[in-house]
Every structure is written in C-alpha cells, then in structure tokens.
View 1: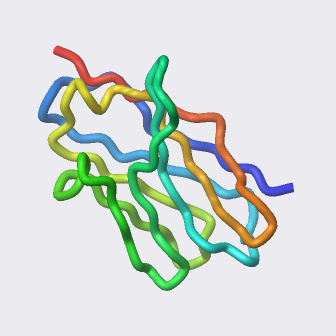
View 2: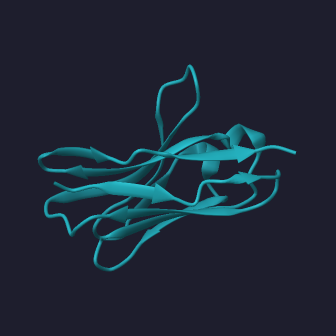
View 3: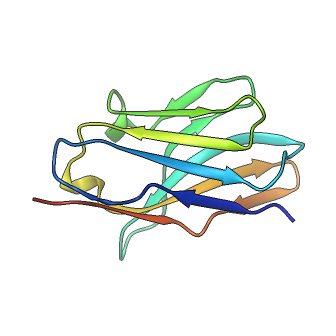
Length: 115
C-alpha cells in the first residue's frame, strides 16, 4: 500500500519561507496529479498547488507568485516551496496523489505563521 509522509511544517514569522516535503513510499503507476492541500479549523480542505506527471503546474489564486510545487524524477518526492508567508497561510498542509484507482493522502503537517 502506498503511503505519503509530509514533513517541513513549522512555526515561522510573516514574510519568511518554508519548504514542505512529501515522501511517497514507492513509485506509483496511474498517477494523474500530485497535489498539496491545506485545511484550517472549520473550513473545507482546499487545493493549494498541483503538478502533473508531465510537469504542468497549477496554483490557487491565493498562492500564485509565492508558492512553487515540484517533484523528483522518480515521482517519490513532492515539494512545496512557500515564500512570503502570511498568517492566512496558517493551516495543516496535506500531500495528495490522485491516481486512476483513487486518492492517497498523507497525515498532514502543521504550518503556523505568526509574529
């Protein structure tokens, strides 16, 4: 069974940067996209960024120009570089892989942006 493990969450001050990593336990076939989502208490989980197997990226409007998603060639690591963080970016960030046979989720990593 494929497992996703996120890391890199931390407490930072506004304006600072963080890099989240997602380790995928093994190479997955039938991947349609790799995504980062985030969720705050009382709100629905929302997509932050997406990268397809061909390398096409998409971003939510609220992170465009600040966040960047990437992956390694083997498709076993997905990264989210987050710059110019604001308190509104505080959330649990989840790694997600969408495949032809369903979604796989990580357990999440907490990002807190506060002065």
